[in-house]
Amino acid sequence: MNNIKRTVEAAGYTMDDITWLQVFASDLKDYAAFNEAYRTFFKGPLPARAFIGAGSLLGNAHFEVMGIAVKAR
Image (cartoon, rainbow, N blue to C red; front, side):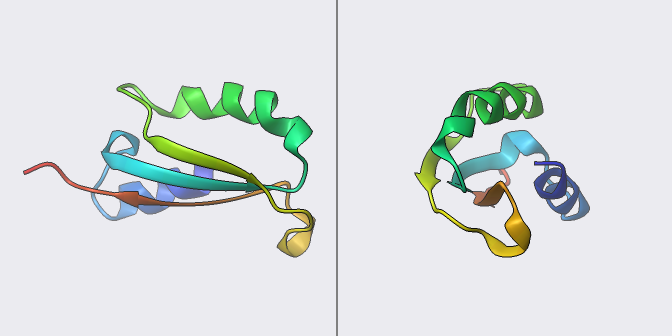
């Protein structure tokens, strides 16, 4: 999530501009811990999200996250 935040902010957005995230997890047992940390990154309503069990991830990562941010006009 820190990498997502850095990327979003470098593009001139905030975490609250994120409208959708997809999270791939190597172990679904990590959902509660991820969710607890995840909520700390947003001030407004949480974006729509999918949390998907993916088995092995590159570099033995626990999570892989991708999403879409939209700047309000």
